[in-house]
Length: 200
Image (tube, one colour):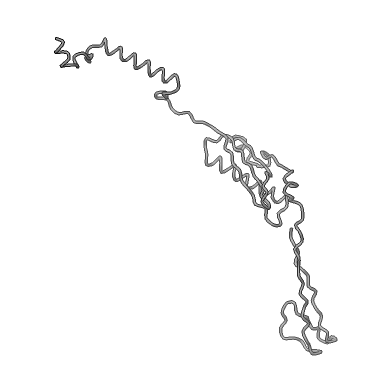
């Protein structure tokens, strides 16, 4: 008999119709699965994933250009901030809150000029960036935004006085040349050179 069992080892395994051995294995496997699930190692069976809401954060930089004042930069920052908040809410349906930092860069320095923080319900109720923005007035002094830039040196070139014959009127005038008055003394009247206005 020993020889027979050794030659046929499958005789020692429980058969499918033998419920006494099969139910024991079910309890063991069920206990292992329950332990793993309780420890968080094995995810839940048949559970649907829960949507996670979050706060979207974004930093946008506005470049200072010649002629920008603090007021014009604040207006540009508000429009950039408004667009960034709206784009975040439109593109990401899971974002419940948006935090947008708007910085100004001038001459290699960068500082925040405003930050917009709003929830989706606040923004849909009142999409005005001024309502949800916090301004940083110290940026004005930090970046020197109201300081006048150094004056641009201008060079003036003397006007050439054309030689005229008394009583003659020139055929064609080009800008910057003297204008001869008929019946005058023969000395040409020179239009004053007015430099164009400089915008800071």
